[in-house]
Length: 383
Image 1: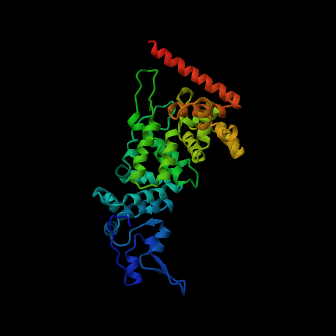
Image 2: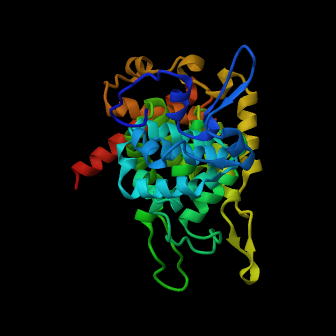
Image 3: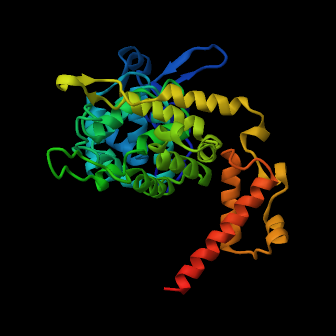
């Protein structure tokens, strides 16, 4: 259940069982022999009226299980229903009394994931905001309200407005990792915002991707996400801006991103982020598709990467040329340590970039590296 401590009591009859359920639309039963629908709570009537109504006294149903607050929001939006007035009032009152704080964190995460997976995710977030719940369960997200982003790249409004818009562009069946990355990708903006110093400057959010990834890690741990989910979601948040420069990177650096298991998901985030980032055109006109979204170019790079054999996707010095730490130690008597690791890393990157094609090139690189290192050491000694 949603509460941190739960006691289970079994009902003595079907009627008693139904009367203890949450909403009337969930209170229907069927006789398996006659296929007759048993309706003690006017559930069919509420389905026809598209209404979410608690069974019995709403406040009692919420006290029994505060998770029903979030379930009401999820059902209302996923079914495209409305709240019964008494249900909505009871939810507001329960939130004011702090009953959201009685729900186990992992159950909050589970209900939010179900809301975000549905195409009604924006409406669900708006309800969570209207009912005063967002600021209690995700204060880091609520902090985006009122944080101006400037018209040049974000004419759609503040960080919260952008957050709602991106929810509309995630498609019909986004993954759990994608929806949470999209939800949290800009949570670093409120704490990194710097205002313009003069008329030529603009609002900036320097390192909000790095800060946001750290914040997201704490949030996801709080909600009891798996280590794998946390690692992948935070990786996408950390590098969601970097992807725009992918085509300008060295091949070795491109491969670090293209080879990541979550790159395909980050590409979907990049598309949704671009569509949710309006900009100011000539004469102050708002243009709803970001002019700097170079999605086609990045997708072409990724498809080219996928079309290659596994061996060609990640050229390996050790596999292709037999060059590794043992080779360096044998050929140049380099001891294990930082220098060995640095040389190997640069050799691998240069090989992936096509600057090293054979062992002769590798020898030349190492010899030049050793000469430069010795020259630096002599220069420091002679100071």
